[in-house]
Image (cartoon, rainbow, N blue to C red):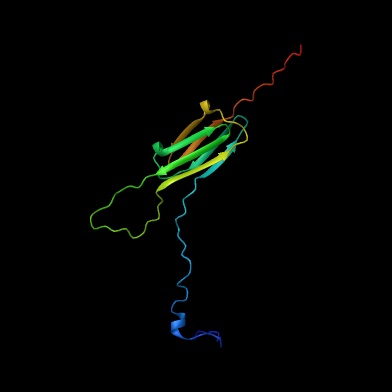
Length: 140
């Protein structure tokens, strides 16, 4: 069966006019840094954070707690494993530093917080700081 095409009487059919069509189109680079994806859960006494950080050694992960703000950063190091006569056809894995910070509703007790990294998942248990009891002053 023949292909049906629409005829446009105003179309320029000169091959030189269509030679550079699309040549000056902006180029899109896929160099976007990956995000740390995470789940945050809360109960009465603590927060539980599960963050996906695959391909990172546990020594290259930093967790910082400042009041109710938690910051997670990690560095993925490039491994120089190249054999003689081998050439790279495609490179999609990210090498560099990635980080994320977020604020929680309650302040976190830094001394009692724990972190565990296993199978590419960072698990944080962040206990809430006990609220200071109100102190009543006697008026003299």
